[in-house]
Amino acid sequence: MRRVVVTGLGAITPLGVGIRRTWARLIAGDCGITSTAHLEPQERWRELPSRVAGMIPRGRKEEGGWQASEWLNKGDERRMATFTQFAIAATEMALQDANWRPSTQQEKETTGVCLGSGIGNLEELYNTSITYEKTGYKKVSPLFVPQLLINLGAGHISMKYGLQGPNHATTTACTTGAHAIGDASRFIAFGDADVMVAGGSESCIHPLALAGFSRSKSLATLYNDDPSSSSRPFDRDRCGFVIGEGTGVVVLEELEHARARGANIYAEVRGYGCSGDAHHMTAPLENGHGALLAMKRALKHAGIPPRDVDYINAHATSTPLGDAAENAAIQSLMLGEDGVDTASSVTVSSTKGAVGHLLGAAGAIEAIFSILATKENIMPPTRNLHGLEAGFNFNYIPGQAQERRIGVSLSNSFGFGGTNACLAFSKCR
Ligand SMILES: *[C@@H]1O[C@H](CO)[C@@H](O)[C@H](O)[C@H]1NC(C)=O
Image 1: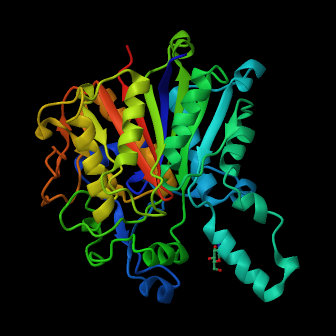
Image 2: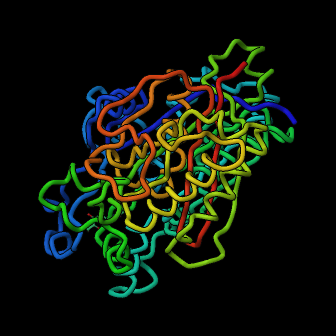
């Protein structure tokens, strides 16, 4: 099969607009989680048991803020859901970073898009439902359906850049971003495309979304007065995830195609493994068997033994059950066959302490963090990790980033419905 490398990165996260700003702040140990108590309508936000979120800072691009008018004209802004607006901006950043501007018909036909979202445009659905209930059919916007469909993110990207390669969208809850990048890498490996724009995007910080996740008892509720402490993956006092928004987009490229044009190569996509828990709607298997299968399959595809894995960017969302299940899965993988001898030589961190859980974008942004760790030999820390429970014996990079040569990294993503994916990256030789 053809080899696939990463040649461009773009991101919008609660740590800021742009991957360089996000990465610098992540490595510095900063946090992008803030209180929602000031948002309107206050009676809706304030009645919620979880009043923290990882929100994109609004403001000027120069200061790392988001302002749609700096990226889109008025018409496009009106036509596009917020998750699509973010995706358009992150795609522009990634293509610029990759220095890839398809101009000939051949280049356009061999460049594709694979971009998903977990929830999509909840706000539009909510607003239109209210309008429809009050006034009926005639007030429903002709943009309602295209505003709602999740594949319109990929659609708008293809329209903007004339990309006529595969056009695909994944929507697998919190595994969306990882599936998008993994599926896109296969399109290149199988020869359906030479270049793919791939990633995940999410913007659903709406009281109704938090109400739903609260009712399913998924969210952190104990740290409303101290937002930056609320997301605490692997910590003994974790109590749920913190909802976040944002986008991660990568440019994937066939190795020889990238070399021929002298592109900067960040890392190679070495493996991609998927599995299903076949267990429960929202809870993981306690022993993490589904997660283990995904990691094993990614490494099998890569032809890499577990002992060669230097860094794992965990899915760990800061829920009591989920983090423990993933911990158990990593234990089985890394201390099992062809693994390492001691738990302390396994290095794992979760970046959700800094940005929260970006749902459909989480897998994409965390893949980018794993790619940068592999490129720059620095591993981002796990924030708010102060105490460990029995059985948590790895190096979780508490508080401060750690430097070490990283040959191979894994990025885990798991979603409601029991869907799991793992991506394996290595330095490119
Ligand atoms: C939904 O309605 C609220 C309240 O009128 C408004 O502030 C918001 O911009 C609307 N959102 C969308 C996507 O139209």
